[in-house]
Amino acid sequence: MTDTTDARSSQRFPIKLPITVRTKDSRELFAETANISAGGVLFYTNVELGEGTEIFFRIVLPAGVVGTETDVLVNCTGRVVRCTEIGGKKCVGAIIDEYVFERVYAHAV
Image (cartoon, rainbow, N blue to C red; front, side, top):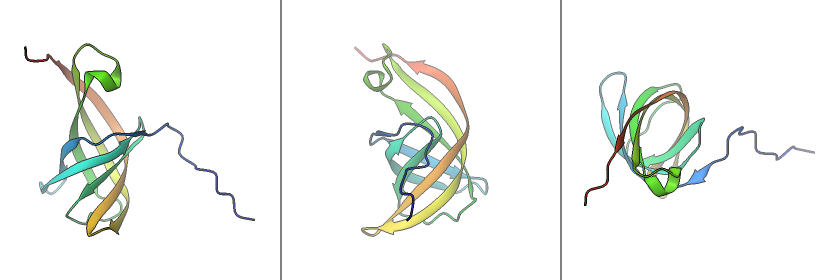
């Protein structure tokens, strides 16, 4: 019998956010997250990324999602663990190896 238990260690939150992903060779890709957790991110893009590709990206987390008064900018470094095609788009799963909260965005009045 096959164990179908999900091996992910962090709770994933379904949230669609625009992100720009940069690879170590300076390619920039525009993407949209499908879900995110403290340990990983799943996003859609038009470009295939190979397993093991090191990526850098920034995410602006909305205040309402993280429970703060203002939006939070997070700089992330990670690596691709899978890339599949779904509906003509590349679905990329990546582990977040490191993240740094850069600053908090104030809402415009």
